[in-house]
Length: 265
Image 1 (spheres, one colour):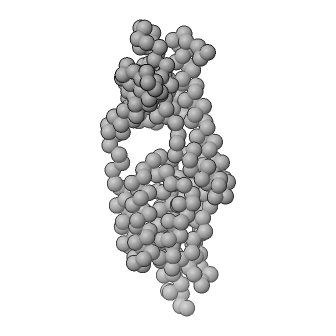
Image 2 (cartoon, rainbow, N blue to C red):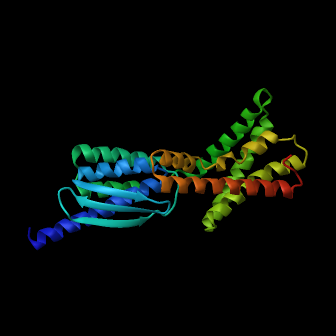
Image 3 (cartoon, rainbow, N blue to C red):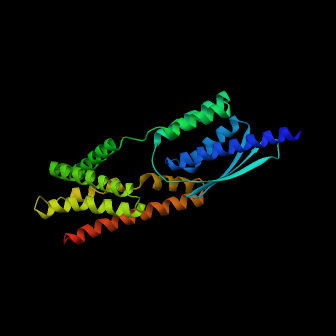
C-alpha cells in the first residue's frame, strides 16, 4: 500500500472517530444509558466498516476506532459537557443508526444528519414548566386520596411552577448545579409554607408533592441499568450524582421548614 493510500485511510479513521465520539457524547448528555449508547455507536461503526471500543466515565468518553482487518487505529477522548434529558435526540439517533446499518450510508450523510439532530431546538421551556406544575398539583391531589383537595392541587401547582422558574434563573447565571437544586427545593417549599403560615389548611400533601419534580429519575434509572450491565464506573458515578441531588433537595426542604418555624416531626 502506498503512502498516499495509508494517509487517506488514517484520515478516514480520524473522521470516523470524531463522528463516533460526537454521537456518544450527544447520547449520554441527552439521557441515554451506557448500553444503549454503545449499541448505537457500534451500529454506526459496523455500517462504515469499523470496529469501535468504548469506555465511559461520568464526564468523558474514550473511543478506539480501527478498521476491520487493518492495524491502523485512532483513539479519542471526548468530554461530556452536561447530563440532561432529550429523548427526541436519543430516538432520532437510534432511528438513524438502524438506517445507516441497513442502507450502509456514507459517513458524510451520517455526519450531516447528526449535525441536524444536535442543532434541533430543545423542549419549549414554558410548556415544560406548565406540565411539570400540573404534575406537581396532580400528585398533591392524588396523595389526598378520597379527601383530595383542590387547594392542595393549586398550592402545589404554584409552588412547583415558581420553583422551576427559580431554578432556571440560577442556571442562567451559571450557578453550581447542586446549589440550583437546593434553591429550587427551598423556593417550592417556601411557597407552600407561606400559605401554611397564613392558615390555609395543613397542606401536607402539597408540601410532599411540591419537590417531587426535582427527583433525578433519569440518572437514578441509568445508574442502575449501567451497574446491571457491568458498566461499574459510569453506573456508580451516575448513582452518586443522583444521590447528591436528592441530598440537596433535602437541604433546601429543611432550610425552608426551619425558616418558617416548622419541624419535620
